[in-house]
Length: 140
Image (cartoon, rainbow, N blue to C red; front, side):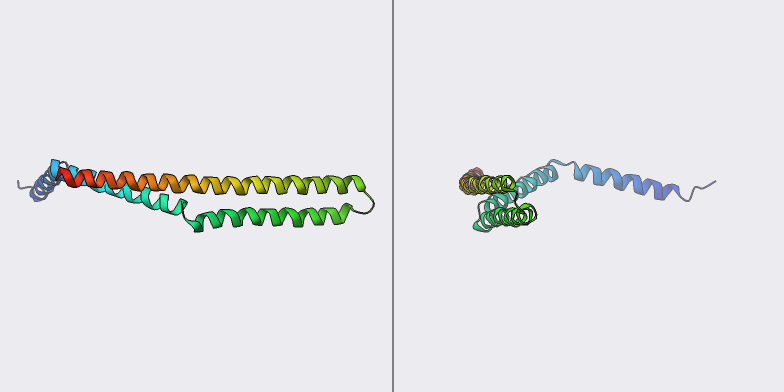
């Protein structure tokens, strides 16, 4: 009796083996490694550029300003509620405002320092990627 499906099964198995040998070949493996490496370098360069950008620093500063504004508005609302003769609460709110302003100032300085650090790291990453690229070009 003839099996009509067997030639299809044999063809499928042969094609799977052929594609497996191709996918696992040294050439394809090297190309995949090289592509992955280039992709990771590109991602690293872009992240360094974004983190070191003025837009990112502006975003962080603006976010901090938003929180400071929120705290001031919230404090004023709380102050309005409790200001009916409660001097103790008034002093505490003012102290909280002063402390929050100090935190905001320290945060602003930290953001600036962090931005400068990220810019420096981004430049180092770009220089490193440049050196890797030159080394590859010399090796070819």
